[in-house]
Image 1: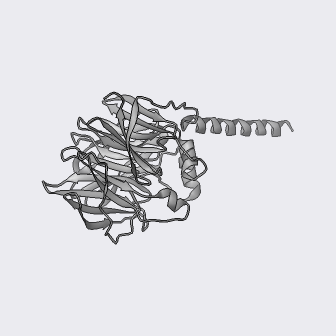
Image 2: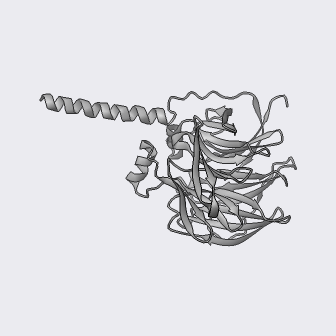
Image 3: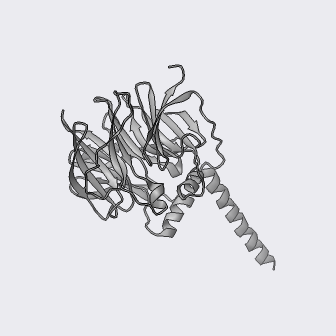
Length: 344
C-alpha cells in the first residue's frame, strides 16, 4: 500500500509539473494590457490576412489571404493574393489571383525584386497537400504563375523566403505528421521542426527548432532569422556557402512570434501571440477572440509596440510600418487593421 501511495504521489507531482510547465511556457499567465496610444485609421475587409510583405522602394504591399475559419467550419473558399498601393491612401486592395485556376490556400509569402519591372512572389500553399508556388508580378495587376515546388521535405511548411531568384528557404512548423507527435510538439515543446533550403535540390539546413514559423533574411543578407513561437524566441543563423546555415544565437522575445518583417532600416517587426493556449482555443473555434501583440527588434533589443486583448485585433500574425502607419494582419480575423499613433 505504501509503495502504491508513493507511486501515485510521484505521478500526481509529474502531471502537476507538466501542467504548470505548459501553462507558464505558453504565456497563459501573461497579462495583456490594451495599448491606447494608437487609433484605427482603416479596416481592410479580408478574412485571414495571415501574412504580408512590403516593398518600401516602390510603396506597395502583397497580402496572403485565406479564410481558415471558414475551412475549419466546413466552408472552403479560394484564398488569394492581394496588391495594396500604400501611397494612394484609399486602402483598396486589388485581388491579383481572381482569374487564376490554381487551387489556393496560401500561407507564408516572400517578395523579391528581380528588375525594374518584375517581382518574384513565393507562396506556401496548402490546397493540394503542401506546395510552394512561384509567381511573377508585373506592375500592380499582372500576376503570372511560373512553377509549383513539391517535395517530401515539405512536411508542414509555414513560411518561405527567397535567397535569390533560383533558391529559397522554408520552415516546417512540425517535424511529426501524426496526431500524437504534433500534440507532443505543441504541448511538450519538442524541438523537432526545421528549415529546408532549395537550390535545385532540397536539403535540411537547420534543425532542433520548436515550431519553426516565420522566416526572413537580414537587410545585409548575411543571416536567416527564424521565429520559434513555442520557445518564445527568435533564432539567428549565419548564411554560409551554398546556402548552408550555422546557428549564431537565440534571442528571448517573451511572446509567441509569428511572421517576421523588416522595416526600411532593417529592424524586425513581428505579429505575435502572447498566450499560445488562448490562440489554440481561438483557432479551433472554442474562443471568439485571442490576444495580439506587435514587437520590434533592433539589434538584440526587444520592444513591445502594441497589445490588444483580442476585441480589436485577434491573433496577430504579421505587422510592419509604412511611414506613420502600422499594419497588422491576423490568422483568422475579418480585417487587416491599419493603425496610427494618436497625435501624429
